[in-house]
Image 1 (cartoon, rainbow, N blue to C red):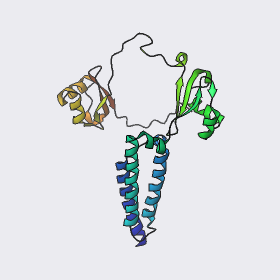
Image 2 (tube, rainbow, N blue to C red):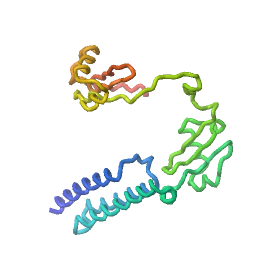
Image 3 (cartoon, rainbow, N blue to C red):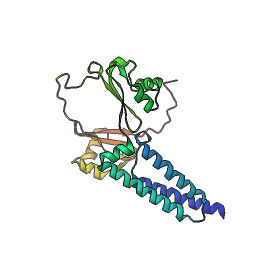
Image 4 (cartoon, rainbow, N blue to C red):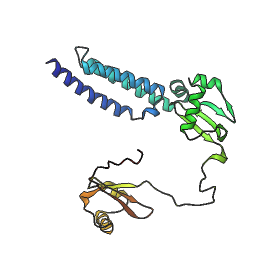
Length: 236
């Protein structure tokens, strides 16, 4: 009976945790601010108590999770409206390097040593600090690097080119099923889509794992299912 109770409470915890997470919004771990990180840990701890039923009532930790989620959302809302509160809860970007100068005190404040700083630069593709103009530590813990003008990638404007604008490719077929809303947003219809499939060799709709609409070419890109395992590893 106890195992059944724990199983049911675990299921309820999973549902509640998923619900509150969806309400609070989704972020990758690398995008979490310090306050978001603390909130996640606290809500997870409360959820753990719900799952193993450390209290006699399922509702007590559920209410605690709901209250904490509400205040977390409230603080997230007010930080969007107030710069002062945003700086208080989330902090601000730290300048770590600029014009050949490493700011040691800011490194200490960020709890970074020189080796970690250089590793962050290398992970961004910069092995020589002389190629870098500025380095900032963002509030979510990621490092932003501004390269010097001579070492940044060339852009079309540098080459006096005017390429046509591109747009995201809409997924019109996934796993053999037509996504009619996506197809409608492209200004096309099912008859046009099937005609395109015929021009691509008339593949069976069920054999299409993905088809995307390319507005720049006014056509679709078709990817067929491949039912064999790829056991070869070119990196070995």
